[in-house]
Image 1 (cartoon, rainbow, N blue to C red):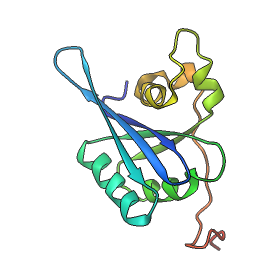
Image 2 (image 1 turned 180 degrees about the vertical axis):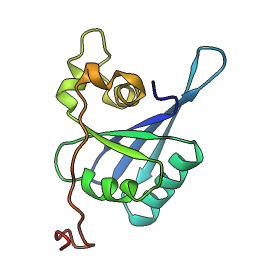
Image 3 (image 1 turned 45 degrees about the horizontal axis):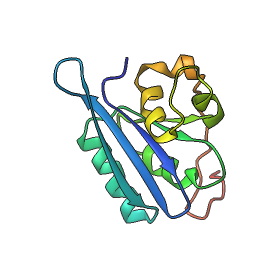
Image 4 (image 1 turned 90 degrees about the horizontal axis):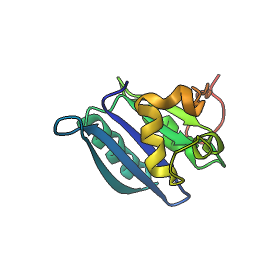
Length: 132
């Protein structure tokens, strides 16, 4: 079980981030923040996740919008980004349909149940070309 995890819902202009950390007793603390997709805001997202002690971040692997977020997070020491098939997360029996609340749950110990997978993403330069 991962004690400190996050789920990201990545859109063209915004990233909704949900962090789950240990709370009182057996409870979990959950905080949601919105970030823009500009480089400075993505750095702020990375800093917030690091400040919360997050070790795993799950995000939906659809479209192309996840790529800059991935490359920003993969640079953070001690942070493991996960790409999750949203269809698998949404179709786990007994789970809610809200992806933002499901992603941190997936990263926090239910990855096997949600069939989350680690993605191999090639290194790219700032223009999206694959690095040599």
